[in-house]
Image 1 (spheres, rainbow, N blue to C red):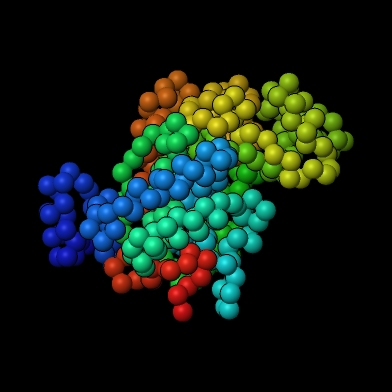
Image 2 (cartoon, one colour):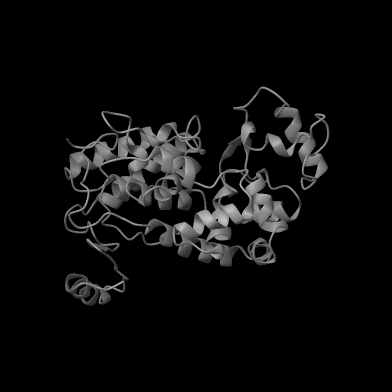
Length: 330
């Protein structure tokens, strides 16, 4: 990608600050973007999230998930946050988000606090990126500098949400394809799957792994039997679709590498977790590596989530800075 003169000047000026600005067609992203226009922005985001997670530990995973589900649809542009209104059909009603995406009220609280401090300055897209980082850190995970300067989209894509976000029952080749479409490779896939070290999943997302056609036993044979029996006790063959189970049953609220250790033991909850170990030697090696070394997992995770956060952002004069994350300004 050709670097504009404007971006080149910014890169040169920021190198002295030991940052790496990322240039795009309309502008650039860098961690100090709000240092002058809204110097308390990151402090405000962190404060609101800390209160929300203290009230409900699960909220950390929910906010992290919003960043993923936003970036995989049209890029990291806060399109996920838009409610249906006029010609806009909200992504909140798509299959990956309906009855599961949550934390929108926390984003509203952050936006409200930021609007009081510095009106129409901090984008909803940047709020999502910061919320993902702060939630991860609060859960015990790695810290990373968040490149900032994203702007907000003027529309949403429910079809994009249905088609582009990886599903729990997708095959590994399908998941890899969906990541590749976003410029993310197999290494990013395995590292970012580690987000499942925190949070909960609904029975409907993994029921197909628990029952064969006669209704007994383990359908795919990859779940450790005592773990499968425990899951069946709360996830019946029919009903209970919204019953919740920890994605990492060992340390469900702590961001660590037990997610990968569980997969090695046949105790990965989702099919999309299990296939990382059973369907590819390349992904299997990474699962083993992260299970053995938490520090390396954290390093790779931080690198990959910054990469994901840079998917097709709106910058410069593109899009807008929403006053309310749920609706466009006009």
